[in-house]
Length: 430
Image (cartoon, rainbow, N blue to C red; front, side, top):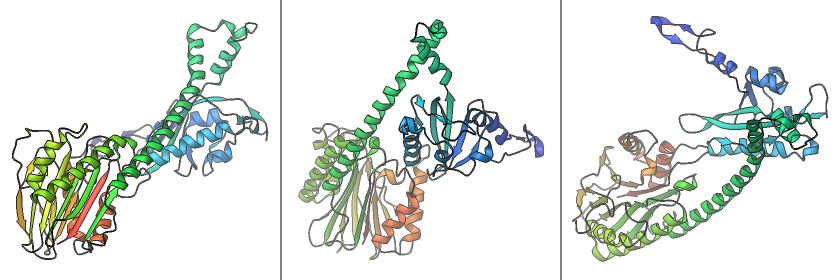
């Protein structure tokens, strides 16, 4: 681990201060171990070396479970639980606080001889700019003496029976924390099952990504990695007649099965409305009225467009949704923001929604998407929109399937966690 200056810090050019982060790491009072995503140990601070009884040369470059095998007498429960926590951090990119752990440590110089030890660990990730886990930080506090004191307090004949009230309460809380960890594990499993069911329901209600009747179009749906954000997005492609194609994308505020159910109702209602009216603004006005009768549908955003292949026009209307993009054959990209109104339910139901029409030359490309493609935590959404426009401009010459894949690769780079929000994408070669 390299510092950024001389030990203890100092003054750089023009009086600039430098911090020796290596020394900061070594001086931390809590034992800290740095691991690769493959759970190979990279470095440890002085406190960790002291409490573990292992030198840095015994730690660096080795698997944590090779250096610290669990006691066979414990059925390897300590190693199993720690591995599950570390792998969860790598998979989710999120912090994982463990309950009190009994993890016996092999006595240095005594192969096969284990000493009973108790620990309070916290594991958390270090992420790169794309959200990928590059390091796992394993921080522990040893609580062996406290647990032993608690155990002795339960034996009236032991000298430790005169523990202070604070020590007794603390030890009791630590011993009860294992129950909380087991409960959290059951909750994680329940959320994982709900996530799987919600995504399955979502995919069942959306058109398939294989579009034999629309070889000029490509669609993509990426569910969020987190259960808290999954299953609100939808897309649709409908032939109104031989010359006109209707397409829409929308985003329900909510998550899980409830959002998937609302999404299904709104998608069906909008499909019926655009078939009946043939006009995007009229269809969204009808959908807004319907949304007031559907619990959880208010604040939904949606964009509806109709492509006239004979007149070479795109007519569209947005209800609180990010604007579509129109990529021209000369490489320029036009942002279609000429008809943007509030989301469903965010205004008077009688309000007349706007509608705009633009022309296009044959070979242009229409791109509709949901905000999961362009939003980043702590970033202005206009930056994400510009990033999308630049990507479409670079790849506009590709056929729709390849273009869709290229845009997703640019804006949703592969990470262990997956996207933070649902993403729907429609690409149509006009």
